[in-house]
Image (cartoon, rainbow, N blue to C red; front, side):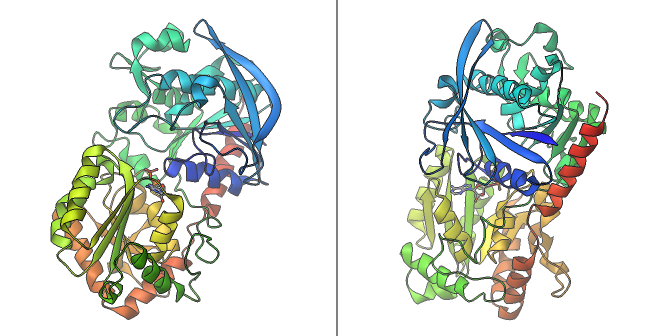
Length: 478
Ligand code: ADP
């Protein structure tokens, strides 16, 4: 089966979050079972030399909205499978993927329309049978495919419904979207263009990245205005829990770590903690005895940052240390800078740093993840892989992948942490306090770590489900 997997970000070519990890891991897990080609934009900041990116010999123009945009296709086998990288000036020549946290690039609709047209052109040239699209940046391709004489089957995966690709109706013209699609059944959304709707309306099947999130997006609370539309299409909607690339996130051979370890020889974890604490200036032996909590992620309202800010004053008065790595909205940066200034046991690193994140997962005792909602979430799985116990709000994929410690049975179970039911500060604090108590029960803490490290958080199971979906869709009559 000839599959083209399209994503606006794929690790290690570009990454802003979990989408890049999934777009890296899932096609690799499927390779060999289906013929996988992945396609992504080639951004200016992508390091061509170290990622073996070379010209593919393919170039073509894409024409829409009365204009023509030249496209050059590069390729790389760096990740073990064929990655096609689309270069086109408007799409590629930027400092970052999408613009700043406060405002995306004004022409993101046009940029990703160029990408979608290029994806469609490649789907035709490569005789693609199944096109797997991800999030709003690729969703327009589902609409464009309607016009193809040999239309491939289309699977559309929603990774985050909060970002829908909303643009003024006046942009229809520059996007070359025919007026007949600007209806309630199509891409119209309260007078604007909603590109996510194109994926939902015109795909043959829709997945989202956890079974619980597949339920939640059909409710008013987490449907972000699309709950009715999703209910309308629910006969072609299912939830498939993500996994992580256990080769990339592997404390047994991770080059970023100070010391290697695994479930059989977990001793290296303590070395990582000591060296990390030293690196951030908390080298008093006192800190080594105390639990280290971490937060890693985008500093946006959805990640529950307000809860952390509210809780911090209380829990930083406990004998703990807390390290945060992330970037996001500037008012959160400012709040954390102030808090780190007031509390010597808080360490703050603003920015994006892949290696540092690995060292933090390895060093930490607990990961704090109070997301208001979470389609799947990967941090909790990465944390478990590194023997770090997650503390999570029971929502979406967090509810599907972390079982509360109250259900811990050493021999038979895996994937444990502390789950709290309501996204309110006292609930978070209570969960953190339970973590503090576990920290002093060394035997149970060690058993939890080891059991979490043995837990299967790989993509194997989900890849099998995707393969079944691909097979079913391709087997269906046109
Ligand atoms: P998101 O909603 O951002 O996609 P996920 O939990 O699905 O959240 O995935 C987040 C991924 O991005 C994980 O691999 C996490 O380690 C990584 N990550 C997030 N922020 C940073 C950062 N500032 N530096 C390094 N890695 C980060």
